[in-house]
Each structure stands twice: as C-alpha cells, then as structure tokens.
Image 1 (cartoon, rainbow, N blue to C red):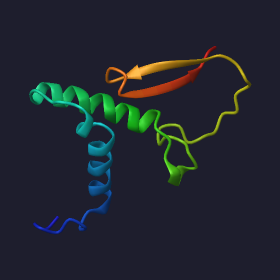
Image 2 (image 1 turned 45 degrees about the vertical axis):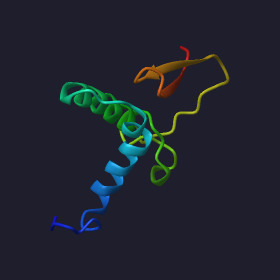
Image 3 (image 1 turned 90 degrees about the horizontal axis):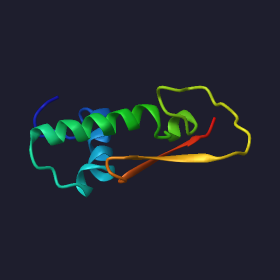
Length: 90
C-alpha cells in the first residue's frame, strides 16, 4: 500500500481496527512475546468463534449453521476472561 494512504487496503485496516478495539486496547502488553501470544489467541477466536455480520453471524471457519436444541451452555474464557466463547454441552 502507498504511504499515508489509510484507505488503500480497507480489509487490513478493518482487521487492525477490530483487533485494537476488541483486544489490544484493553490489555497491557509487556513485550513482543506477550503480544504474539495475545494476537495468536485473538486470531483463533476471530476466525473460529466470533460471529461476522457479513457471514450471517457465522465465523469464517464454520460457514454452515448448525441448529442446536436447548440445553446446557458452557463458557470458555479467552485471554483471561477478556473474551468469552460459549459452546453447547455435549
């Protein structure tokens, strides 16, 4: 992308903004190793669990909707509870 052109790559800018708002602005990053660990966990959450409006509230890694009957739901904490993922109990 050309320098000083923030709209030249809208997809990358959108992802960076989302990562900052949902994750990085809420944590104190101490070093590069910590940053890589946090970003790895967030990317996993973003691609496998986080609903996307453009995909009809489905994550990119799972594009088929699976209807589930009412039952017990388990919460899984990501990044020390900053983000919560919910799964139906088997």
